[in-house]
Length: 166
Image (cartoon, rainbow, N blue to C red):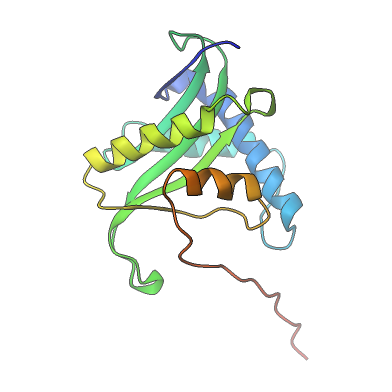
């Protein structure tokens, strides 16, 4: 089993990280094609989005990279931000983990846990009193992982398609 390192994403990590992000989008779309967006190519847009977060004081963009020095291939990524109070969500200011994804061959090595733990430390240091996240209902593995990290269920999103107007 090779080692990996969790570190802040650099611009040159984004092409690999955005390919993983595209897989995350495809996974969600497979879960519910009506709820989750899908268009191709998705990776270039995700790369631009990730680039817009680099260097921001309110964002955490991490990668898991192969090798003890983190110089190898990107095998996972995480995106989190500080969020303001949101009256419509009944949510006070917090940290929010938006994305966590690990390449299929790298799963089972603790990569996702390590990414999340590092994000939790960074968000706390940035002043987040708590951290929230959403996960696809069908993703039992992710729900289990988040529970082991101390997350508890607080909301359930429900979706209904609109009926055509007469």
